Length: 468
Image (cartoon, rainbow, N blue to C red; front, side, top):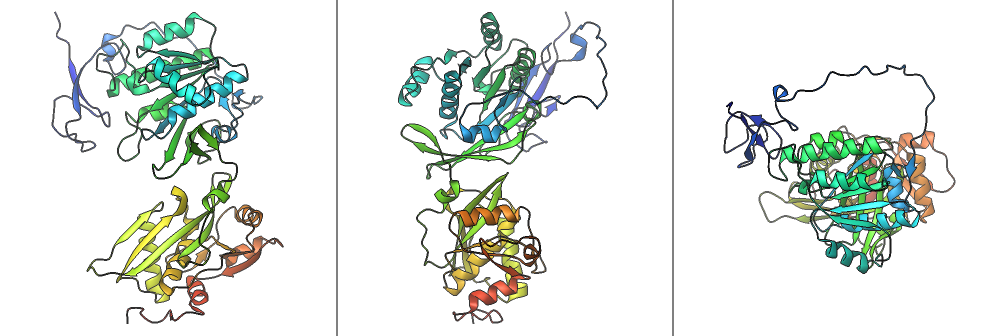
């Protein structure tokens, strides 16, 4: 009898080796390599599978009549915005987020909203018992909705249940790490099981036209756990973000084959579940101190949505040999670049100061258009002078000290005017392309112009060292 072969698979990155090791050479994780037998399932040797001969498929040209993808709308505006107008039939979405962030709450509310519109929704829980899901639904006031529940982890049993009755229009799997299939000879949660289970659910979605949502756990650094190949297999990846210290939650589209990426939906966690935030800019700017130095309002963009947030900076004399650099909600490397440009081109030396930077409301910003607002907040805190409360800032700072124009300037300005701001400090290039009576635009060619404006009325001299 032929001896079955075994391979060793890293449960973090999916790397395959022919022998066990304590540390994975691909990703560097310790004690993540487990033995898995080669079989007929996903990852098995091609020699063990006797498949039938292939069929000839029809080849067509690129030209043809384009049909819009049929969608299932929930009437939850923030959720429909992120998905690109609703869930596409036959699509598979992967939803990730930290434990306790509200993934199950969001999906229960979305399921109830779909059943109200006459859609059949099946909710499969692999982590909680049916009574636990019912308790959550009762707490949210959704116990009377016709969502069909089941607590099961076997992929074969789930597929048999789904095909036994009328075809559902939405299937929710919570979570993909708890599923296991007979086609893979390994423990639930391993790379092989997650990949095989996801492939089975994707095949079901494509064959039946049901929209499938897979919930995924995340690692310590916020990445969706399991093999990255699952993110490539699905049609969309949604990330549910939030901070335990804030009640606000942000649903972000990282990948979407049927809509825009980097789109966000904003929710607020309340005692009755997640509620939509129709005007997130007003939410992030609420209760700000208009007379405090070190605060600047940034007119940013998240996908197609303009979003105004307050950037707070605190610059204090450091008693340490190596000053602190603490950043919340922004890129630490980007802050180091802004500090270097202020030092080299503007004479504002912060090498002996602790610098703390925070984006208010728990928001995370990644676009370089926030450079100008960050620099304004830093200089304002150092000079001890409050910035004009009715002004917004946006612009990218180059290493030469020049301020570069950014995209979607008219949309940023329009949103600022709608929220009651009367002026905007922008790159000089924006003035040539944007003409608006709504806001008074102040153009800047270089960062030295910004420092000179803030230094007026303070004892800060941009050409001198503040430490002297």
